Image (cartoon, rainbow, N blue to C red):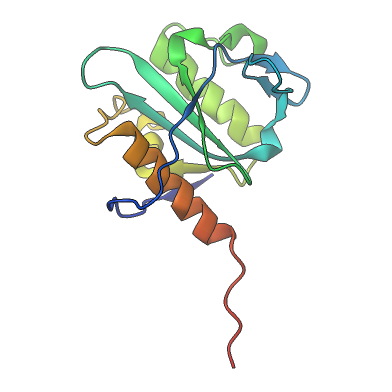
Length: 154
C-alpha cells in the first residue's frame, strides 16, 4: 500500500461523499448496499481514508474508487467484518485495521492517506479537523492528478 499526503487547499469544485448504507462482502470485493450500485471489486479501490467525527466517537471509512470523484462514506459500525476472512477482530478499530489489510492484500496498489497509514499501525483514528467535503475534494483531486498522464514536452 502507498501513502499520499496532498496539501489541503480551498477548492473551486467540491466532491462530497456518497453515503454507503452498509459494507458487506461480495465476490472479489464488497457491496456498498445502495440501489443501482453493483458490487465493487477491490481492484477498483484507489484510496482508503479513516477518520473520527469531531463531534462524536463515530469512526468512518472513505472509499475512493478509480475514475470516480466522490468517495463512498460508511460508519465503521456498518461494515459486516465477518464477510471478509480474518477481518473480524475483538474491537471495532482492530476489525477496521484488519479490513484495510484485507483490501490491501487483494489490491496491493491501494493507497492510504498519511493518517490512515498511522491508524493501521496502531494509532487512534484521526479526528477530521476540516470540512469533510473539503477533505474529500482534496483527496479526489490528488488522485486525479496522479492518474493523469504526464504532459508531453516539446
